[in-house]
Length: 406
Ligand SMILES: [Mg+2]
Image (cartoon, rainbow, N blue to C red; front, side):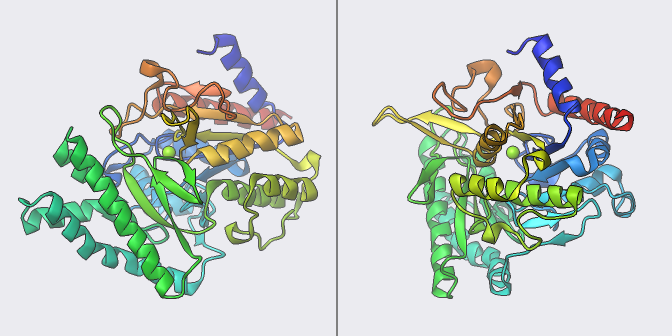
């Protein structure tokens, strides 16, 4: 636990930064984790605080802005209006679909770097998943009737535009603590999603897609490794088909490019920069920043996320580290060291939601981080999202006061 003084100093340093950029994940950070994404809610005061931070705030999420399941619908529900958010520019600015879908406060989305052929294939994926889903479910749950299967299909297959997803929560509900069945669900649907990648390849989309598994336990041969259920950890709960190159750390470069363009009038990586022409490795990404960004233009970046994992492997005693927020938080941390911009990493403990996550209050950082982890948290909100939201609203307020004075 950090001391009261540390917490005060921490906020003070952020509020008084010369240039500031907050890059924040959404689910589990400012929205409690729920099993059914259609029931998500966002606090009104948070929406206004994000708006108050203006150009110094971006979201970076693997969910989507638009569509029936999009965050824009949550904003509209919170404001009880579909006109107000547009009129007052209250949509959350930033990148969704893991770095593909960008919008400003006005809610107009763009998706540079994605081809028409890819968009067309993506739109067909839920239809490809449906019969496979039925087969798998009939096998694991032979007693379900058609109506029940339809119900679970509608809960499990998410027809999102850039990231069609299979989610296991509604099926997990049925098997409760049956470990064997949980793993059967995970393995079967991983296989199903791999078949869809194969179908894409046969249609000439060889380098277009990859599977993003949440949470995962790291990467092997460029593939994310599924986290199979154990007695006290539900493991992976969903698999998304994503466009290759759409990873959150490339998203940081994209957002940084936008931020500096707005501030200086010139985009350091060029105005056409997107996830598709982002370099892949951390080293190349750092080199790109070193080459094109003046130290004076580099803001203090605050990275906020809730999905970070670390597990000790039994076979060689090494840690396997993953989690969908890890890459972008690590990148922000390294970038801060390179530029001396005092970047800060905030970890939000989302274990109080409906989805299982290790709890820092109960078991410390077990399953999240370890002593040898290069990713270090400068601040941890143990009782999130509520605690983080309060802090964020206060921060936005103070930052705006600070900027009015200086
Ligand atoms: Mg999250």
